[in-house]
Image (cartoon, rainbow, N blue to C red; front, top):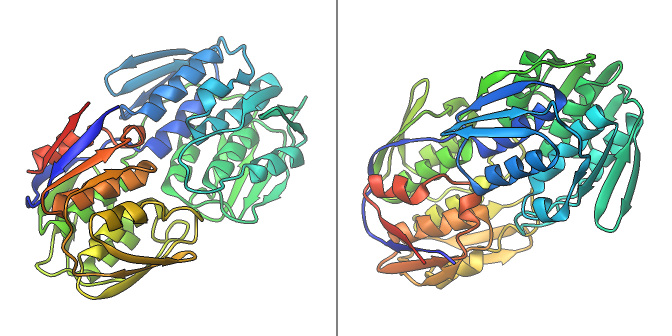
Length: 416
């Protein structure tokens, strides 16, 4: 199993280009199941999760071709309605094939999904919405089975915003009869990106990016050729790395408007940030000021950047608190950061951090995708060597992260 070794103390400078967003690419790739013919997707990142979804699409009968960052999918031969456990267990986003399969084949059998161990992420809101649209649902032997001779538009209210739930039901509604209204829908850029792609395919979706999405069903959709939006979480990770190392990093091919909350918090730490259309320049402060954050659904501070920001607060001046409101087990990385010398106390969903600590390198273990990134950031400022194991989590969501950090001056390498 691979490990990543980081020698701390280097100031990061230079340019980095952001890859396509994994969380946008996954639902957009599954949307290819809604139509016949070749769909072309550019700026697809080379990640384990992307490889997993491509294997799943092929298992369902679609043809998949890959050329660099371009992926082409043809679901004309869609024939299999079952997404098996072996292909679904490693990635929660696999549940996104559920609604397209029901819409196209009138039935689906999908294994309950896996993914990072950061807390319960139930799919009950997906299933309730699909039931409201006329599907019959059964849960047995670890599988969700859904069937519907036809899907009918209706009003669906989410008790809490759910990104994959909004995306799944939006795809079902695109081919349903009548009008579907999704209330308290997720507002993330990845949701709006999927809606844009579906509209280019011929769907009639309005309001994506707001809490109310209105979908007028159509009888069929057409193949599409699109480019995936940049990854805002990767962008935020490199922004935090610049602030952490007193660095000077120019981040290219990004969407600053997707990170307004993060930019605001980093400015409060004393970081100097300049924004243009597709570029963010971050210059880290000599002394990092402590800032409190609370994770919230978009456009609030993203839970996927909480672990990275915690590292920044561990070496900041003063005390800070981080409130995690999205996932109940997203402080698993705290014990590993404490091994590096961070002073963090967790009570319930609140982490209290005493900053201005000097971190020192040690062997640590990654527990989930974003925790992996936080341990790399901690290694960048820790004295000595940090050895990070179980980095297979990292390969699910960051493309060539060691190479990108090396190009910025970090001492980092991967070893068996």
